[in-house]
Length: 340
Image (cartoon, rainbow, N blue to C red; front, side):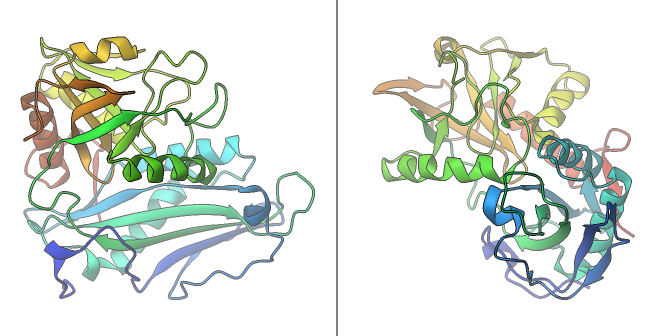
């Protein structure tokens, strides 16, 4: 049974749902973990997460398919990425099989908040791990908490996906050999000023360049870039400081293996962006946000796909991947997991 909500008018905001999963790391091991109705967290004022930002998170969604099933999309890759994030931050790795199981338990317990098929809304799932024990010296904490909660969110694009305008940012997103390749909370904290500044100046997002040479495209504050050449080749930037987006990897597979397109994952120079036919930002929330215009310090780079709608290749990729997620199209093996 689905909760009665105005699904099509939901925004991307937190709505408390009844159950969440909690596991605690103490004495060198993780507890069994349990579902709880308590959405509050009590920690020391000296907790490691508050002192030294020792925290990482993930984001994924659950969907109701055309035939009424409830599914998640590639949660094993979220489990893998969270394990990599935890290891890089000297946090205890939460077992990947337990991660997937916990996600499924949370979705099943909150199944009435999985939006109906066709509403455009989804159930957003947020796993988060943080240091909970006191730390005053700069070192890893001894105790941690892993929580997985969920919240229904509305369609990312209300009234259709309109291309956005972005700018080449003067700020750096990540340092070479830093933490840009993991989903650490600190990465997003440092991007807040840049995005607020972009919005204040009339731009929808930032294009971050590599901090070493400022010659190569990296990503935005929360999404990977995807370009399409004029001959239909899909190109995604390659860098050790780019977060390995699950959506981007899935789109590249769809392009190459399902749609028969040529795909290149390589360094992309800012100077060649003007030669692309289409550009999109790919991530969990929107799947693909089309980009119509890029401003490089006063110079306008207008994509041939324009400011009215998604380009044809981007649209085909979007329709195919969302078709797989929603059960309208057959999924590659292991991509879609049904919640019983």
